[in-house]
Length: 275
Image (cartoon, rainbow, N blue to C red; front, side, top):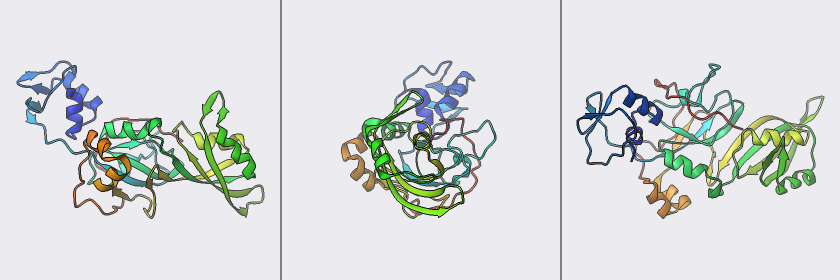
């Protein structure tokens, strides 16, 4: 594997960080200080960072996290808003998100310490439905929602088929009533749910992701995170995919939900926030 990936898999930094460290002359392989990250390494190579050997690579892991409102799903925000990664429990290693939730959205966010696993779970070919509970101002009929099954184009962007069910009408606010919907989609385009419902005259005022494929929010409280066990991954991904991605059993002491708390480290900027 590439040297930058090896450093990232060891949990030291992101690949971007690793490339900078190499440019700064902090990384050597078999006694030679590297000047470029264009190098493949194997387990037999002796890799040093600042003169210290790499720790053992962390096994790929997956967590369910209940993202609260008021956090951005990015590693650093130009506007200085709080981020998901600042709020995670201290015991978690460096992680990336699988998919995104925007600042005002809440609910299930999958986290992993492995980029290959993240890319696999984000692929449209995986075919997993993201399901949301949505509260919105306005009025709509089920017949109008059913038309979304054919997909829709908004501002020149084509969105695939969407499942939408009118669940209930809530209190009348004096202007327009609130309604609750359940919305399912298989894509992850930027702010997709909000944009599509806006074309139907609905203004979303609460958006909660309740599932991502087979993984569900269930009773996780805002700020809590829980490890997904290997047997669950084997069942949902299939043993062959799990082996290909190098999935292993999680640490036995990390199976209970944990309340979020400030983290002491801040990874480099990652993906922009979505939906």
